[in-house]
Image (cartoon, rainbow, N blue to C red; front, side):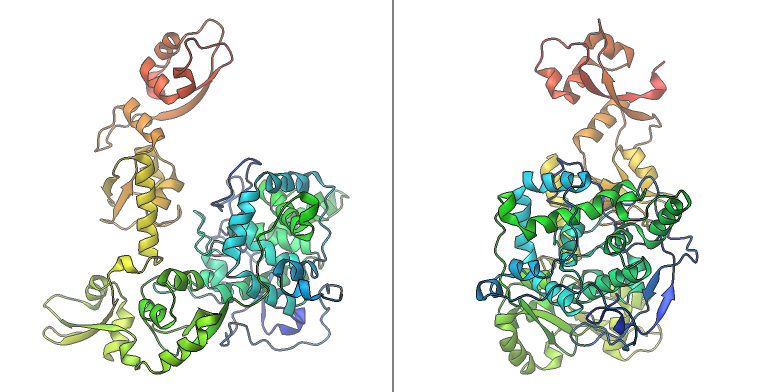
Length: 580
């Protein structure tokens, strides 16, 4: 899944390719976890498939056609060489659009729906029923989509692709531009780093192109078009490939062919999450296509541009940009979520998405602002023993930024000399949606839920997230998320990790008598135990070397009952080294 763990074009679908290469088909742009029908989707997650994880370190020459990185123009679209004689994509039927429809983006989208939504399929019905039971989720998604959906619709329409594709960010990220999975997929379209870079999305200290609304949309549609072309021009198979990788889809198709079975999407033996992924998109498409049928009222979205792409020419402090745009710093980050820090990238892309109503005023005020005033600066006197790396770390910038600002080549600096350092105009908490502030906000939220400050742990040589999760009695996913990491990330010696005390790991630690050094080597396991005839809490406690009070603490329902009954299920945290 990735949610990979998470560019081919459009209008004249295949008229716009210039270079085509072949890579591992099992790399998907993203993958989305199969969610239980009653699971809250307010914070969609994406994760590596636990049954068949994609091994990105073992790329083989499995076929998946992809576009090589193309130069990006001002408006974020690729300059691709036209090609003749390529088949055109499925073209939406041309019908008259009424004035009422022109004002509503949902109505405009319905005109471009061309896929069979397979409403008689049980998997589609299951996903449809979930959406119908959670209309509040649709409202939340529509609110987030207001900023981005018009642009996506325009891109899909200009490429003459099925308009259902414009709804894919609902499945991927619930239109949260900062959505991040523990499988390292990021952004509206949930690209993993390797696939993002393959499709020309730059990722570094300052900027993560996977969250760039314009460029990531272009990349995602390119990916889908490439998969469609290479998978029998079948859009359901292309969608499956976006989730699980083209190689996995082809493998399943070959297997069915060998067995004399059909090779359509619903006949393939794909991973569980992928079997739900495509039906989920079909289900949300069916609702948007006919909300009245399902007694759903979609939150209106105006059929008009929300933002304009403005060429800024050079690096700028985002707080100054927000002031020039007469908008909040939060709104600027939501439109430009690719920027990780307090400013745009020193080396570009030099463009910002600005709300339409403020774009012209922003251009004029920016033109009147001298370039040297776009950033704040500090003079730093180099001390003995200092390196560019040490200085960059102190000022939360990069060595390249310091080199560029001071016309330095290489790494040689001399004590006593002065350096000009670009710095944030305001304190870090003013840049509300920078990566550091998002992490800080998440940690504060977790601490509020647990009601206790986190344990601080300094990483030692040889540590890894898996071993630390076992030692602290928490999941790898939680430990990574608390610290703004992915489970596959490497740890840096002496870096500090925060470990939050959740109800579950409190139980683990109490039962194992583990102190803050976490030196105890006991092995704790969660046991879902079914009460048998004649058993009491005292008998069960004795059986597993536990106390009755701990069992009651872990099982609130048990605490409220005078007696337990045969068949009751209780949760135990058992030290397996202390049981027979």
